[in-house]
Image 1 (cartoon, rainbow, N blue to C red):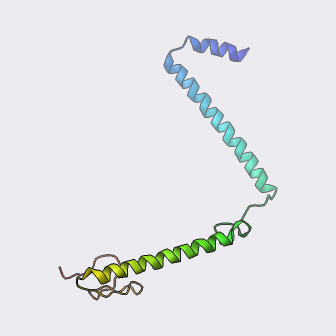
Image 2 (spheres, one colour):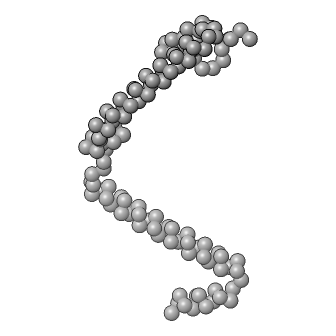
Image 3 (cartoon, rainbow, N blue to C red):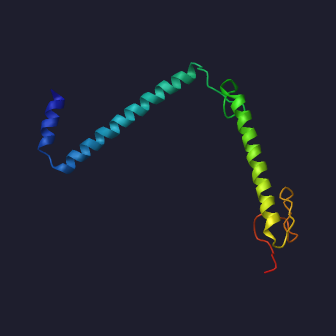
Length: 123
């Protein structure tokens, strides 16, 4: 048997040569698996198997749990409202100087644009 004779010959070789042979075998196995996968993949595409499409959504509509999404949306809105009320309460009880800033408009207290980046803050 050819494989048995090759293994017997490897037993007498130095450790470095054994590593080279093992690396070559590993590369050969990976190449064979890659070629096999490519063949079956291209064949399935050629047969026209249905490729799932999401059509602009992250999850197909038949898998959406709309009740869960509505509950989550309500919880987020409630959390936002309570945190907004808590911030107003803190601002009203702080007693420090007040700065009125409309968070939604992007205006900053110094009259700038309110965007990120370099701004002239008068310092």
